[in-house]
Image (cartoon, rainbow, N blue to C red; front, side):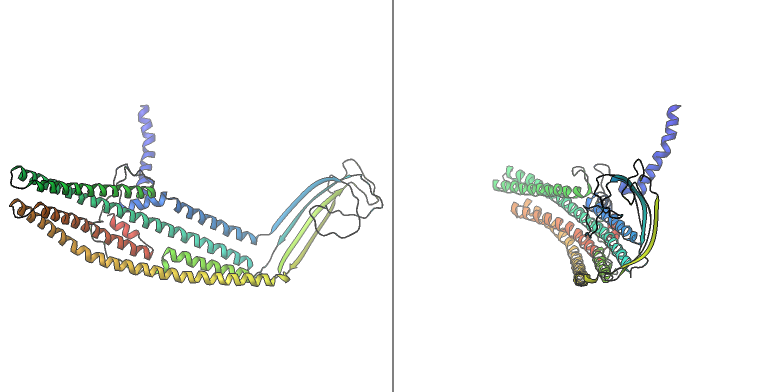
Length: 467
């Protein structure tokens, strides 16, 4: 009975959690050994890889900078309260502002006494700039441009990580396909060795034929071991991006051995996150220039103050004693309007403006350079895609012809019309043709991915490859 009640309590929670993980597959870690698709691998990397989290934290920092800039519109309100016991000797004279000598008010006395009295003060001061010729607005614009740049940086980082992970997945699958071809080559070499040894034992072939077959088998095994090593290295590289154990990592081929759809180049290169980051940097530099242009203006401030003071000393030098002066009992208030103007800051502001102007030109030139580089990468990737398609059309023919050549070579060998070397050469050509065929198909996807990365959007490619 109690167990049933517990199950009734746990079941809704478990069902809700399972539904959540289904709707958010990136949060559910794959089962060790379970094959993950290309799209899933990218999703795991985007959740795990630290550089993505760094960019997101920088975006939050930029958003906080905007809030900080907007606080300049608020008035300042300062409150003070204090109690002291001190002497009240005062002399005439002017002093420059100092943090060591404490200010004192009241008439100058003819005596110099070390007697002390209580003093107290409490007050409020409020100040507000009603207008600033757009300086605060320009500082807010700097913060907003910084946030836009940080957000674009997140997208650029995610694109870079996704592209790297996808490339690592393709590398791993290429290594696995090489292992399959190498394993087939080992099996064919073992079959050749079996046939050769049987013919040698029957004195139908010289003993050197058996040695040649064993050498061919050893060479095929060495290629298989090298291919397996390449798989282990590719898994280690991919596992670093995913935060998974390389020994249990397994990827699904999906449609990566089929021909992908034609790449679209309708998206403007300016929408690429790299271009957006650089454009945001130019906008930020432009905002900084506007802030500098608004620095050489008067600063107008509305001010108001109210305060009260208390003292235990009289104007004739007498001290009241006791607790007199601990309570503020003399009140004052005042309001005012002040204007300050940095007269001699003009040379400094001019130099700052020249620097800001040069920085703006630099960022705009870099933006143009980014567009040129993106166009170059896109055009090269498109050319590689067309070349990979043409190569992929020839490799099946090569595989078929190499397979037929192996069969003919074996038939000739068993009929005594050729040697083991000819069979081994035919088998090596078949193994290489099978590897070339697999790599040709994967190279199409690699070029397709490169075109999409240059355009700034690879989601559709990932989805197509993982279907």
